[in-house]
Image (tube, rainbow, N blue to C red; front, side, top):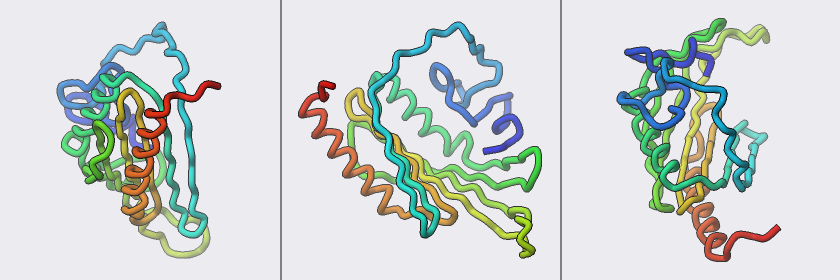
Length: 192
């Protein structure tokens, strides 16, 4: 999000990326966590991605289905659940430009899949003049982030726009997508 070296938190933690092996005691990735370049690259996972762009209001909905171990997915869902408390409000300060107020809140989701987690990230503040000769504008970017686990498969969804995303689009994508994934799992994986 363009913040100084991620989002510094007390104790040297950084909430800008998930931990490499699970959450730390305070729920955030610590910059002192060893990261080795000799780690094995995991094999490619089956998956599908769709991106839908609304040219009228600039909204974007990105939807992805992929496979991971259920335990890894549950660990990530648990970590996501800590973010409203550990990274719920901070200021992102880019190297250039205007500081932005960032808020992370939980998002209520329909009962879908085996486990689920949703977040709403709102980035606000005054944008510098865009050179068009007009006054500086207040802009708010809001992105809903959703992850749903169904067995060893996961749905990840982002729904974002300047302003407020359509809640029904997020909920409908979760409901319909989980139902379709459940049906695909019942039918078995396609042989290619």
